[in-house]
Image 1 (cartoon, rainbow, N blue to C red):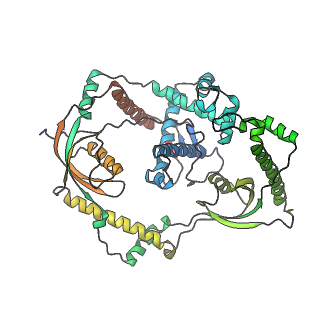
Image 2: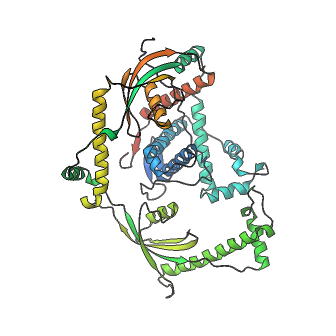
Image 3: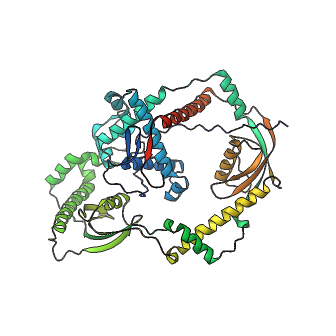
Length: 487
């Protein structure tokens, strides 16, 4: 039996992720937690540079889409909260801005040609194997990204990459040998799983109400908006042949088959008629928008009303964000297409968030109180039993083992294994993200030679350590101020 080595860790390579609008076409995703005024308003400053709300929302959207790819489309806002995506997005853009401060200090620049070379190599903008300027502009337009914004963001990302290349490490033979040892440490683990199912609580209503009294400011109604709106139904246009031909010639890049090949006019006729109808419908909606603003709507036009809150699913996200920016002095929103029709919206009143009464909040308060109390009791049980317990003995496992422990799913098993190899303790307990607690004791340890580290493994590990080291220095070098509540 090899004596316990106090320091053994799973070497996870963490590299600085650079935002370059990698998810063009994936859609914009935001959490809508914060409201901003102008897009230029700073939500944080790092050194001499500002971070805007729009930049933070873009960082969140990029991260969300990255996770969604990893989860094969099964990522949602609930998982985003679990992963702390809001905090990740903020930390990510702060790290990037720290590096941009360093680049500015040493006058490191990226030329327009460097930006051009990268953009013209992106296959999403190709037609017949080459870069197509029209496709470039249309793709960005469809994703509501200005070309200047895209190019500025690309220049920003290339500047970050160029700056970090100055710190590119080398791999030494001794480091390769050390990593081989670290990668091949294997543990024989005794473990026992504790869950809150074994915890019995005696819930008293006065205790729940007492909890609410202390935390009632955490149980707020959502801000809401009282709206008036008119609907413009679709108009079926009847254009002449010449009008159809003219529209096709001006917009042919909009009409492609599944392979991206431009359709002939005959093949695209149905889509052309639909596009012209939409154009006519929007024009009519704009007329009603002007009449609505001037209080000159025809008497037969129905004005409806509704109340929506800030997380309403009845409005597309981007429209809801626009509604949040409306004011009583500028209450009208131009026609927006919602559920196939054009809608003109007027803000009548903003309804502020209010503290919920105990009766209104009781269901949510009770659920949180029970979860919290069970967590406290489970933690107390783990503290009192981890030094001596009867458990299940695993096979020998390394930090890279692909193993599922009995009683844990694949994700929980990976989290448990990672925590074991990041711990300096021979025994203890690990609280998993799902709320389960796993008691553990390292019974035996050995070094195998199953997996040999490569030079690139050393370089990735050192790059991660260098990145973290550089960022640590920069955080002491440049002042960081965040203006968001709770951050």
